[in-house]
Image 1 (tube, rainbow, N blue to C red):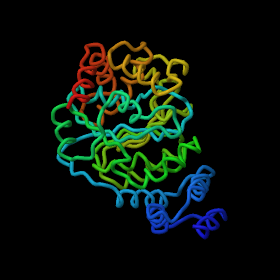
Image 2: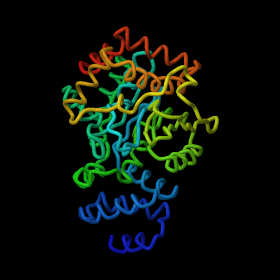
Image 3: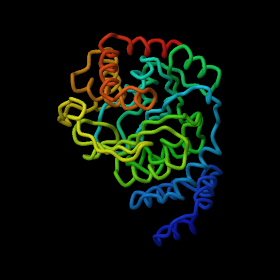
Amino acid sequence: MKDILNYLFEHKTLSKEDAQNVLISLYQDKFNHNQIAAISAIYNMRFPTLDEIKGFSQALIELSIKLNLKEYNAIDIVGTGGDNKNTFNISTLSCFIVASLGEKVIKHGSYSSSSVTGSSNIFEILQYKFTSKEEKLKKQLEKVGICYLHSHLFHPTLKKVTDVRKNLGIKTFFNMLGPLLNTSNTKNQLLGVSDLELARLYYYLYQETDKNYSIVHSLDGYDEISLTSDLKCYDNQGEHIFSPEDFGIKKINPLELKGGKNNIENTRIFLDIISGNGTVYQNDVVSINASFALSILNECSITTNYYKAQEALKSGKVKKILKKFLET
């Protein structure tokens, strides 16, 4: 590891194979916590190259527990995190809206590392039982429309670096890799990215796959569609810039998106919104994120899907999906 660190400190980059070997060595406990923190810090000073991202992510997938859920035309809605905006859990809420409208969602997530609250923190408070059992996950998909892959159950390598990431309290290159690590290899993905340069990297990467995707970045730094500014979007058709007004929505003050101070407060906000008791602004944001995901899966326009999402929230359909999810 010392040689690798010296090599990287000289501003050199790793080949895809070397990047794979670094993560495999980490899995084999060849690095101590200080060395893991050091390599994480290096990638906070520069982004990984495309080859490094490929190598790191391929190593993590090779070392993971795999799932065979290819029969489902499912989507994952996920963000890189690390935008330091302390929003409520927008992507997780959007997943339940999409499932309530008859689509399949395979959500991949974890505990918080660089944010206040992750999807797993909320589900744990709601007493959802994480599982890696394929049959149970299939049952949830078929009966509820959504299942959840808690990353620590599927990626033992990530579990090894949890304490380091938490103690650092800032985004690391593991945040950048997270969206690539859904072990069900979903056919569709809505990916929120907190940095425009990183969004471009993902775009180059996804062009080499057969996924249907939208990579979104709010130009004021959110890793989701925030409606607080214009939006840069990369998808199978190319590059686009949208403003909230393009969808008949007014721009939102960032204060309207603030999350709570801890997991309990953020779970309360999550339950308020999913129960149809969110503010107009909260409902707008989760609905527009859901609408982009829906538009990857169906032939409706983003605006049409936005109104479908709004109606699902108001009618109580989304709350019913959460109830079934927790019971199944």
